[in-house]
Length: 89
Image (cartoon, rainbow, N blue to C red; front, side, top):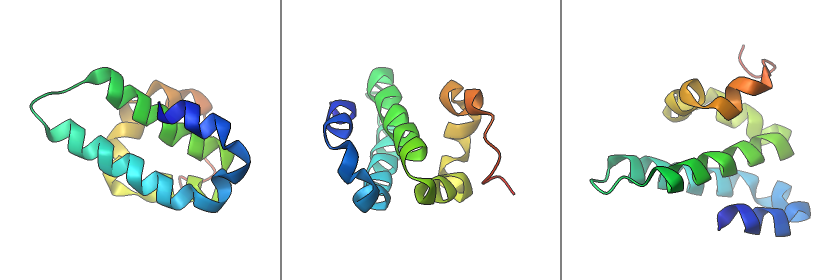
């Protein structure tokens, strides 16, 4: 899965975080709109986005300011548990 690949290439993530974030977000949005809704895939993509958020501060700002992801952040337990407000202003 994508989560395993992110773990394997952990040291290289900062160099590609913005591209990865866009890809995961696009997949998430596309899957959310399909009639075949697979919650486990959606959850996996949310965990990947969260992992990018944790690993790279510059993508954290992008994530928190992206209107397309507001509903994901609002409904996600992962993001709610962080209590991280540094990018919310």
